[in-house]
Image 1 (cartoon, rainbow, N blue to C red):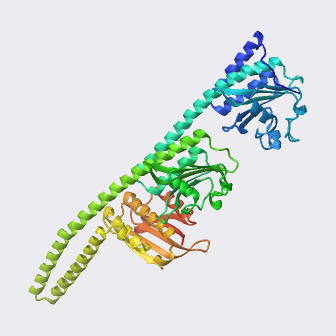
Image 2 (cartoon, rainbow, N blue to C red; image 1 turned 90 degrees about the vertical axis):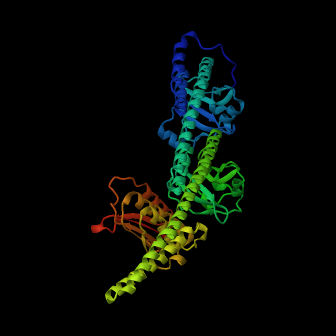
Image 3 (cartoon, rainbow, N blue to C red; image 1 turned 180 degrees about the horizontal axis):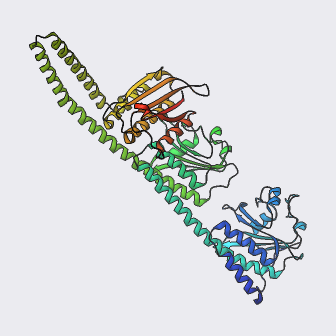
Length: 553
C-alpha cells in the first residue's frame, strides 16, 4: 500500500560522512544533464536502490520534459521503448501532489500501471520531490532496494537531504546553462550583424541568418522570408538538415499566419504538421515551430521561422525569449544594411551622373572637334587613299559618338526604367560591371532567353551573374570577360534549362583559396534543381577561369 511519510528525525551521525560525500558529488559540476545523472547515481548508492530516475516537470506542469535514469541497461532500455510522459499513473500523481511517496509493493498500488513486459521487475518504491527556488523542478524516483525489503524512514531522510542539495545543484546548473545559452545567442547575433553589414552578397548574408538561427535554436530547419512583390512572404534563405526545394516559394497573403506576422505578432506552433494555418507541404515532418517577425522601429522587414522535427521537445520560454531578441537584432541589422546599400547606391548614381556629364561635356565635344579636323584634312588632300582612310576614321568617330550617347542614356536610367526582360537585365549587369572592370564584358545569347526562362530562375541567374562578375573584378585580374546565356540547354534529368557561362583570361582560381562565392552559386543552383561548377578560362592554353551556372526554366 502507498504511504506519504511524515518527516523523520534526520540522518544518523554515522551517516554524515557518506552524506557529505554524496552532497559533494552532486554539486561537483555545472552541466545540467550530467548533474541529473550524478544525482541519480548518488541517490541509488545512498538508499541502496537498484534503479533511480529523475523526471523533470515540463514548464506548463503537464507531464515530464525530461527523464534521466540509472540502472537500466542499453538493451533493456531499447526494449522498453518510449520513456514515460508522466501525465498518468504513479509519476503523474507525484507531479500533482509534490509530496514524498513510499510503496512497499509497487505492483500492488492501483496508480502503478503502464510498465511493458520488457521492463525490469520492480517492487519497492520511493519518490521525493526536488524543489528549485521554491518551485517544483521534478521528482527523484528510487525502486527495488537491493536488500529485498522496502525503503525505510532512514532511506527517506537521507534522500530528502540529497534532494535539497540536488535543488541547489540544479539551480546552479540552470544559471550556468542560461548564461552559456545567452552567450551563444549573443555570438550568433554578432555573426549575423557582421554578415549583413559586410557589404557582401545580400542572399549569402540572409543564409547566415538562417544557419545561425537553426544552430542556436536546435531546430531541424530555419527559414528567412521577405515580403514578395505580389504580396505574401517569399522564402529567400533555407538552412536544413536535408536538401530543401522551399527556396523561392511564396506563402500567399491570405494566409492567417502571414497576416499575424506582418502585423508584428509572434506565432508559436506546437506541431507544425497538424496546424491548419500552415502549408502542409512546407511543414511536413516538422513539429514545434517558432515564427517570428523581423521588425525594427515598428516596421516588419521579414520573418524568421525555426522548426524542430516531429516529436521533438517544445521550445522553452527562455528559448522563445532569446529567439525573439535574436530576431529583433537581425531586423535592426537588416535595416542598417538596407540604409548602407541605399547610401552606396546613391553614391553609384552620383558617380554615374558625373561620368555622364563628363562624357557629354568633354569626351563627345573633343571627338566632335577631332571629326571636324579630319573632315577638313580630307577636303585638303588630293590622294584618294588618304581621303578614303580619313573618311573611314570620321565614320568610326560618328559611331563612337552614338555609342557614348547610348551609354550616357543608360547611365542616367534608374532601375525602374529598365525593361524586365532577362536579356536586358544581363546587359545592364554587364554595363554596370564595366565601370569597376575598366572594360565591358562581351555577351552572347542563344535561344529565346526572354520568353522561356521563368522569373524565379531569371532572378537567380542575374544574382549568379552579379556574383561571378564581382569575383572576376576582385580576384581575376582579367583583360577580357565573355558572358554567355544559353536557353537551349538540356539538363541531365532531361528537363529544358538555361546555362550562364562567365569566362575570363585572368589568373584563374588558386588552389586552396576561399570558395565562399562559388559555394553560394552552387547552393543557389541546387535549390532550383540545377548545378554550378568551374573550369579553365579563355586565356592562352586555357588560362583564366570559367564559371558555369545552370538551372531548369
